[in-house]
Amino acid sequence: MAAKEEEISFRKETINTLLSSFFKEDKTKLSGDAALLMAEMLKVFVQEAAVRSQKQAESEDCNQVEIEHFEKILPQLLLDF
Image (cartoon, rainbow, N blue to C red; front, side, top):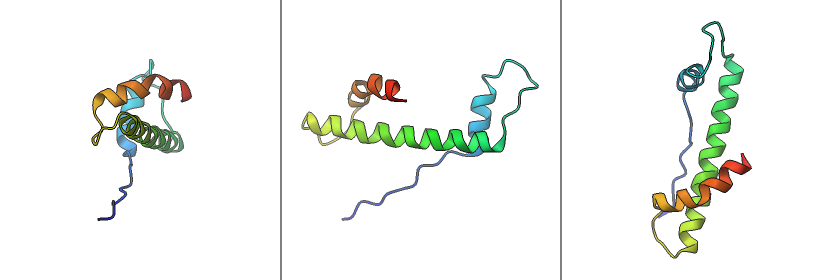
């Protein structure tokens, strides 16, 4: 059975809400292009986390990725981004 690759995406409204929650002033706005760019960055981040977690699980001879595998790759992933 061929693995179906699904597209990872984040809604622009979700990104807008998330980033706006960190703005200190109510007048601060987020442009549409900035939200799209942040959505693309999150997409790349999530894909890279998934791949690295899978490789970590394979290196430990596991058939399934667990949270422990993600926790092991997270420090280096954060340094890379």
